[in-house]
Length: 213
Image (tube, rainbow, N blue to C red; front, top):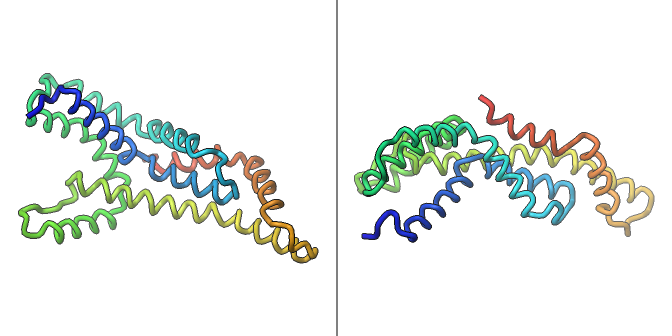
């Protein structure tokens, strides 16, 4: 069995930590909403995926700073080193506890109950029993909750831009300009309105405030 301090184990832990940051924070919801807004504006690659993902990542860390701080404080109180698998698991439970609280605060109870029921069906006969306290159940329930809320927010954001597209299309048809692509006219109008209402600031504020309390 390799040492827990070997480069292989350290690399695995680092990779898992990166995946955890993307799945245990607001990253899923924020990134999906940003993508939907970009499509609603009629823009293909502006802003680029890299810019949107970077902004979503930093906003996710910003929102979860109290969680990171609580986890770091809990780990700082641990006096032993994780040199054995058992000690490593204990260290994991201590560090992940604040994240579990964050998940439970933001999970839709319906989705949590769904995964508890599904887990007990899938694990039947294995001796495992799924409960709401299981981390492996909380994570997918949280992600499905985030995706659902992201699509709900995206739907509401999409409607005004669809209305602009329909209005421009109707005007062009009434003027006999069927050969003109509506996007040529509607995209500048949508950008103008989005900038005029300070869309990015209001969008970010709305997303961040969904995690208050």
